[in-house]
Image (cartoon, rainbow, N blue to C red; front, side, top):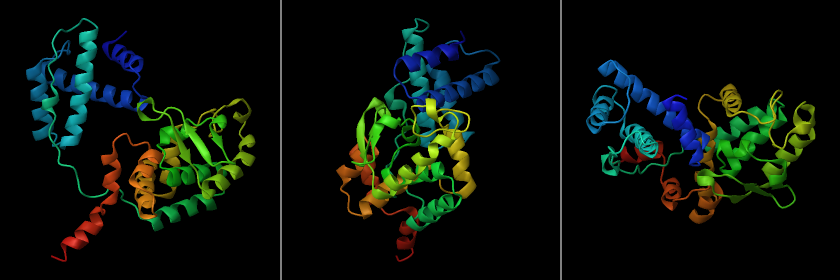
Length: 284
């Protein structure tokens, strides 16, 4: 087993999500590539000076921003922990203090307007694909992560009560998400059509594809790209948070619905977006 494969197994055993594992492995492979190009040999263990040189490279040559560099440092810290737990290395060479301090942005992360979202959803509706319409409606009006939506089982939701259980949210936390009438109607319509998928009968998942019993997020991303170059599943999550607060939901209600573990994440959505901030700046 290669070192990267062993690291993958280590992350999985420690309960990391598929997306987290993918990001960590990508970062480690990039570090390995830099190391080999720099020193003409494979990376066996981590040395603090090498890591600091790599950070300098990311800052001054690659011109990466602080958040990107911090993500790569987090990946390297996790890899460092793996090396120590495997008995390959004894010392921890990356500290929390190595993370670059980033001032919290005042602007809301939301980059799409309510009109843009409604136009997007309408285009999907007019395509007459009931599954796709159900997905975009669910994401836009619940704030679910795409990974959570695609993991829903048929037994996880109740259209009578308008509730859906998210069994494995971020950090393996379970929560109950409320669904409005728009979502319920879209899902009810899709469920009538679901049996036309050949794999549907033997699938426990709500969303299926023509070939697989569990719809893939890559397919969903392609669906989004067909109807908008701007709107993504994650942008719909941002939209939900801003829209919910503007429509009167409390910070704590939005945090619970979206599955935010830190209330400060939700508070960001109370801020104006960058476009509104720029307009205000022009008034000075």
